[in-house]
Image 1 (spheres, rainbow, N blue to C red):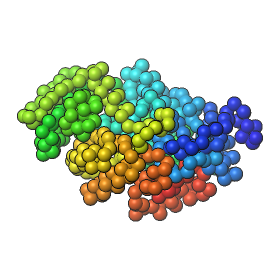
Image 2: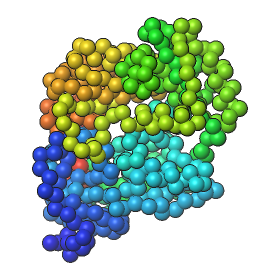
Image 3: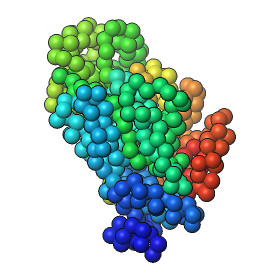
Image 4: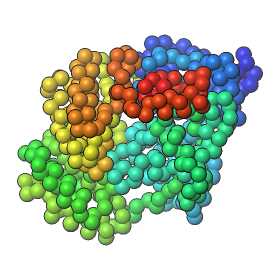
Length: 434
């Protein structure tokens, strides 16, 4: 009743959904359209100690969290739109609930784009992408969300609004507070607005697919080293396991995807140079322009999405694995072995230039848990980590999504305690159950 009087009855909806396999639901959903309404909702929740789940497009519903339901679902799907776009400065300020692809389509009219390539861009919101620090295969050339965000407006749990960073690219005053909230999974504040720097849409694009039919890992490593040590500037150097390569191209072998973006003459020059680095027994295919774009669009949709309808049958899961860049070869190789060892469908790819891998699995629950633990052991032996980015609630309650607590866990808990002492925001969705 209090929320209805503050927001209006049309902004609230009782959710009759029960037992959703991904959890992270709520009894009541609220749909603010202004920052002031977000403030009112959080102030109410904080005063009454009501837990709040934050959602945009819902693609990350299976990422973290051990609660089947919260008191309130704060949905930002109606909180969308461009706040300010300064074409000459190549910056844009946008509301957090704006769909990522909608934003890219708008910017394309001005021959500009955001240098990020998250999964499920049509469904994911810009706020969700930033809150989860999401990125894709082109991270090698684009960088991460932390490289693109200039400033943000954040609503704290007590309703206070703070501003981090600024609205210009050359902003170096004070602490870089943006980094505190990027990747924090909405556990210390609700992102309201984001200011990002832009880049021009490339004049020409191609992706070179290098297939290694003999599955010689040494050939893959030598090819990657030669390319990374050269003066070429690929925006991606992504290695795919044979199962995923077959799904995308019909060719069942290890596959390296080298993405190039620039003016046409530069792309063509780099193609000719890279052709000389391809091992003699490897096979080469080149997709250009629309065909290259279609290839990457398929890649962005291979993993599970929390926005999809309820999953039936086998468990779907997704891991994010981080290692030193060339150790990606061992992670992708391990994913290939897991297919038979654990009777799973495993699609995996990883960046040979940045070290981040995504391992998507489908199979029985116990097999999934065993494979996750094995991948975590493999990553740890290489000095890396493995985080579960998508798991059903039943598995998230059995397996720690984030793995062992880091040595700096006390700092994270201290920040959470200071900003959100009642622990109302996205409870248990970050490292160590924060």
